[in-house]
Image 1 (tube, one colour):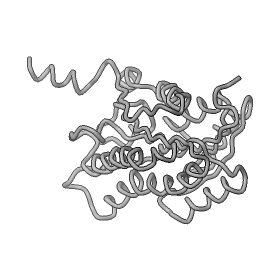
Image 2: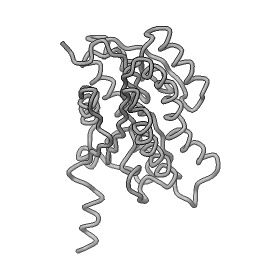
Image 3: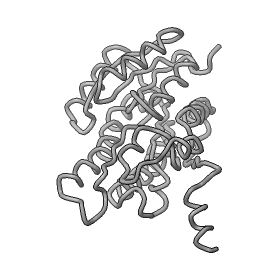
Image 4: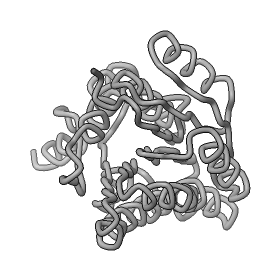
Length: 252
């Protein structure tokens, strides 16, 4: 039997990249998956792939809008009356990401898309999990959430540090309810968010990066761990680490 049979998982940012890979991996293990993102079409495409062997439900939403987040929560309540896993993966970045280009509006986009939305989703998930004394939250942060650098931009870094703090804080308070929280910090992943970088990344470099399927496999592993364990924080980076290589070249 698949290890997640009978479980209900909500995956945000599920139309592409890490979210898509996570949804496919969890469905492959038998979970019923709710797919959320801003655009219906890519969610429907993921749902079609899952429907060949599993069950997926499309619930588009702008997760920076608290009313839309509550609406997804109401759907989960009415349809399943349970939520076992939240993969809190939705996120954004912008091209004009450095201090000389940032504006209040672009700061709002970054904070709301990378931190506020995740917090909103947690408030939906926790009541389901507390009621069952069981549940797992997996949050996609970034290596920028643990280490400060220039690549991702300062506001993305601030927001992802907030995700790391949120996840550890959840474990500190919700462990008494049987709830586990994992923060996932990938390095460079070959996803469409790379298209938002000021300097484009070519196909050869992307092929050396962490792939979405690698992230999906890791999220599957975390989701299948026994409930008496929590993986508090996990990093996943490419062997060909461009940051390390750049540092080595500066030493020459």
